[in-house]
Amino acid sequence: MKEKIYIYRAFERFWHWMQSLLIIFLGLTGFEIHGTISFFGYRNAVAYHNIAAYSFIVLIIFAIFWHFATGEWKQYLPTAKNLKAQINFYLFGIFKNAPHPTKRIVLSKLNPLQKLVYLGLKLLVIPVMVFSGLIYMNYRYPQEGGGVEGLNIGSIEPVALFHTAGAFLLLAFVIVHLYLITTGTTITSNLKAMVTGFEETENNEETERLKETENYNDNKQLSEVTNG
Image (cartoon, rainbow, N blue to C red):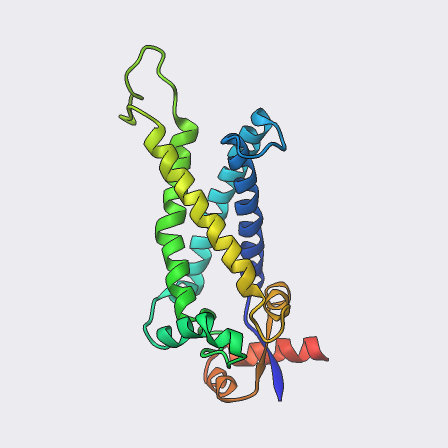
C-alpha cells in the first residue's frame, strides 16, 4: 500500500525552483559575456547577469537562515552508510530495475551520495562562484597600470578562471540533476514531489519511523487533506 508523505516544505520548494532558474539564467548570460553564445546582446547580458547574481546572493542569505532556523542543515551531514550501495545503484542497479538502496523521508531527504555532492556545492563551488563573481563585478580596471587598490589584484584573469571553472561545474551538476530527476518511482515522481511537496512511498518501516517523529501527525493531516 502506498502513502503520500509531506517531504518538502513551501519555502524549500520555492528556494529550489528560484535557485534553479537563477543558476540557469546566470549560465546563459555568463556564457554570452564570454562570447560562447549570442542572445541578449553583450551589454544587456552583463546587466542581467549582475542583477541575477545579486538576487542569487539574497536567496542564499534567506536559505542559510531558513536551514539553521529549521534544523534542515542536518540534511547535508555526510554519512558512509549505504554510500557504496548508492554508487552501485547509479552505476549498475538502475539499469537492472534494482530497488533503490535508500528511501526518502522527512528526516533524511537526501541519499548518501547526494549529501556529499550538495555539501560540496554549498561549501566549495557556490562560495567560489559568489566571491569570484563579486570581485569580478567590483573590479576597476586601472588607468595607469598596477593592480586594483584595496583588492591587491594585479590581474583579473585568475578570478575569471576560477569563476568559469565553477560555472562548468554547476553546468555539469544541472545536467546530471536533470537526468537523476527521472530515476524516481516513475519518470515524473521526483518532479511532482518538488512541485507538490508530497512523496509517494510504501507504507512500510519507513512510515513507522516517521510515526516516531513529531512531524508525522502534521504530515499525515496534510496528506489526508490532499487525498480527501
